[in-house]
Length: 479
Image 1 (cartoon, rainbow, N blue to C red):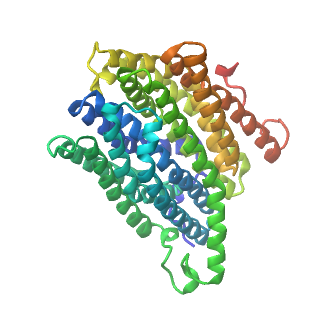
Image 2: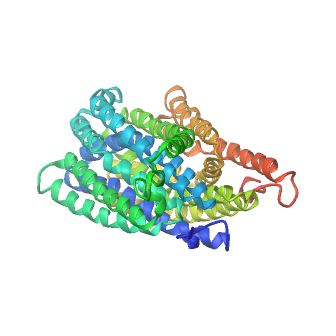
Image 3: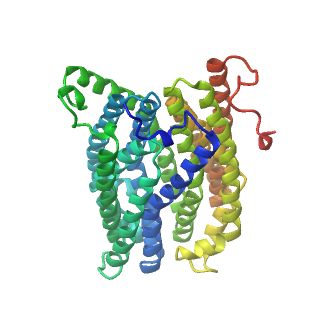
C-alpha cells in the first residue's frame, strides 16, 4: 500500500520542525474559524450597537455549547484516524472516518432540535437584558437549526488534520470566511436583518466549507472513501466483517469523543454561567465582557493549535508503537506552546485599547475601559498555565485518557472559573472584578494535574526516571 502522506508523518524525521510546520497553518485555521464569530460581533457592534454586542456574546456562548459536542466527537475521530495513519492502516482510517461522520450527523440532529427549542427559556434563566433578548434567541435558533454544515466540517477537518494536512482546511475555511464577511456586510445592515443576519451568514459560510472539505478528503485520501472500493468489504459500510470493524470504530471514537465533547461542553457552559453573573452588572459590563472574551479567545488560538498538533503527532506515534517519540512530542510541544503564548499575551497587553475599539466600543466609554480591564486581568501570566494545561491535556487525549481531560475541565470550569467567580463577586463583595480574577486563575491547578499525568504516563511506558523516563522536566516558570 502506497503511503500518500509520508511528508505528514510525525513518526519519522525532525520532530520539532514538523510540529512547527503543522501548527502554523493550524493557528491560521483556528483564527479563520473564529473569524465567523469575530466578524459577526464587529459588524453587529458597528451597525446595531451595544445591545447587539450583548446579544451576540450571549448567543455565541450558546452556539459554542451546542457545537462543543460535535467538536469533541471530531476529536475522538481524529485520534482514531491518526493512530490508523501511524499504523499505515487504510481500512482502519476508513472505518474511523465513517464512525466520525455517523456520530457527527446523529449528534447534530439532536443538538439542533434541543438548541432551537431551549434557546428562549435558557436565555431567560441567564438574565439576558431585555434589549438584547429577542436578538440572542433568533441568532441561536438559526445557528442551531443550520448546524449540520458546521458539524460535517469538523468531522472532515479532523480527518485531514489526522493525516497531518492542515493547509487544505486552511484554504477551504479561508474561502468560507470571505463568504461570511460578504454576507455579514449584506445581511446585517443593508438587508435589515441585524443580529439574525449574522447567524444566516455563519450557517451558509460553514456549509460551503463543509462541502469543500468532504470532497477534498474523498478525492485525496483512500481512507476517506467510506462507500468506495472493489467488493463489499472495501467500503466502510460493506460486509459483515467490515460492519463489525465499523462498530468497533464507533466505540473507539465515542470512547475518546464523548468525554472530549463533555469537556468542551463543560468549558462553554461555565462561560455561559459566568456571562450570566456578568449580565447582572448591566449592559456596559456585559458588553465589555463579551468583547473581552472574544479577544482572549482569539489570543488563545495559537495555544490551541499547538495542542492540536501535539494530539495528532502523539497519536500517530502511539499508533506506530513509538512511545519514546510520543513523549518527545509533548516535551517539545509544551515548550513551544509556552513560548508562543507568552508572545501573544505581550501583544494583547500592548494593543488592548486599540483592539477593543475595533469591536465597536468607543474609546473613553465605560464598555471600552471595562473591556480593557478584562484583558489586563485575564490575558496575563495566567496564559503560561493555559499553554501548559492545553499541551498536557492534548497529550492525554492522544493517549486515550479523555476522562483525565474531562476531570481537569471540571476543575478549571466549575471549581475555579465559576465557583471562585461566585465566591469573589458575591460572598466577598469584589463585584465583576472578582469574576475577571477567577477566570484568570482557572488554569493553574489543571496545568499541575496534567503535568503529573504526563510524568506518570512516561514512567509506565518508558520505565523509570532515567534520561528517557520522563516526558517533561520541571519548567523554569513553575520553579
